[in-house]
Image (cartoon, rainbow, N blue to C red; front, top):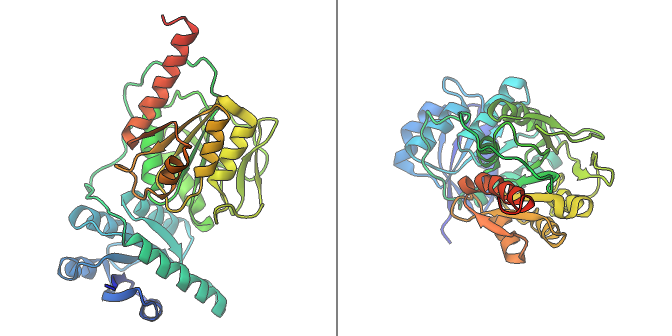
Length: 354
């Protein structure tokens, strides 16, 4: 079996040797090259053509975000970001790297216990192996989110009460595109589960608020959802809608190996809202959210899964389609227009087609 070739970009000799050691132990992987800086990585990238890249955040000279931008614009390659710190600047760099095209971000183990290092080693190698199979696309380095200047005039009948969005690998870019296309006057509370490490959640929330037309809040305790806000699940707790239309965070068992779980969110929306629920399942690895999306559809709500043509990883939306949980499967750019179109259709239905 052909081994997966890994380029390690890491300036610390200690960490670099540790990463080399755990990659050498994994029969799926082999080291294609090692670089102590982003500049060195860019020099060898075309020559060695790795299958996947392990990218440090803090590097001498060009940082991990800038390096990701360059790689994704010049020679798109799956990138797994490995960050040592959760300081605000490092959080910003890590989340910006996700926006620039990195597929996932892992935190280097803190402390000296062998259990922590073994847990990291297993997760790191598995992520490298899985992400090496993702077909990434070229991205312009100057591509930025810009707000729409003209928004569709939509008056909602009120049939839908809340919208839930679930995403994982490739989610940061997908969710910002979706939220940006909905526009600042979108009248529903938005409940979001994005699989991301707890230590990177604050940085992700701050970044998301800076690039979408809504305020963003991490749900820590009971919240009454309001329009114009995105409520983000996280900190190793499920995001759940309660029977009195409030949001809560709870520490129940992981579902689909995830906490927060998209299936938990969608199932609670189906139970409380029924046909007033909108569910959207975007790119992601695994099957989280698929069964929950089916519950919303069975309860009479409307469900959309991202189409394979645009999903970075088709695992989660693909499973929803397989289960029959998606009313529609749409490419990412078509999802927001469809949601707004549904609103118009309900308005016209109320007005007798006029």
